[in-house]
Structures are given as C-alpha cells and as structure tokens.
Length: 155
Image (cartoon, rainbow, N blue to C red; front, side):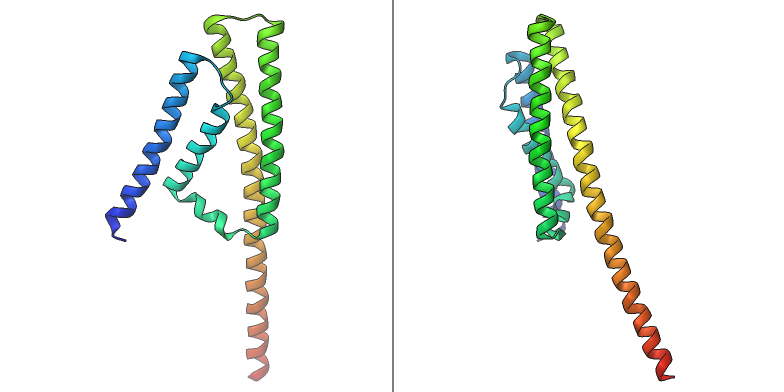
C-alpha cells in the first residue's frame, strides 16, 4: 500500500463518520428522536476510530479483557438506554414540554447520557491498557534483572 492510499482511507472513514453524524442530527431535528440514533452513533464512532487508527489497539487485548469490555459496554448501553427513556418520560409526561424546548431537552439528555457512557468506557479501557503496560514493564524489568545477575555471576 502506498503512502497516499492510507491517508485516503483515513480521510474516507473520517468523512463517513461526519456524514453519519450530520444525517443523524438533521433527521433528529426534522423528525424528532428515534431509536435508530442509538445505532448510528456507534457506527460513526467506529468510523472515527478507524480513521484515527485507535481501533488497532483493540487487537492487542486479551480474550478476558475484550470480554470484560464488551460486558461493560452492554451494561453501559443498557443504563444509558434507561436514562434516555427516563428523560423522555419526564420530558413528555411530567413536564409536558413541546416544540423546540422538547427537542433541545431531549438532545441535552441524550448527550449527557452518552457522555457518561463514554467516560465510563474510556476509564475502563485506560485502566486495562495501563495494567497491561505495567505488566509488560515488570516482565521486562524481571528479565533485565535476571540477565544482569547472570552476567554478574559469570564475571
């Protein structure tokens, strides 16, 4: 693969991500909230992850780490879905909001819910990345100490 070709692929996935977000935003404003947005948002996130190369880090995870992250994702998505439904109930049934105020309130509620989800998943991913890095560093340090002892014992 040539140098320009990789850059073109990154730009393509970046454009796809922005198109998905734009379509989601415009259709949300025109038609109101729909559960399809819960599918479009992760697709755009995956597209941006492919674009910046951060999705390659997932290939370095062990099976147990990947399973834990997927379980945390499923639980987090369930919690966010519950929060969105609760916000929708409060906005429609208790506050009886209509029009632009209702749409803005729904957008704010979903952004806050998704922000909390992304913070939790980022913290989980960073925790396991740091633990993996420390394990490798300790392993390398142990090998280095063993090599020094072996060299020192020879001399």
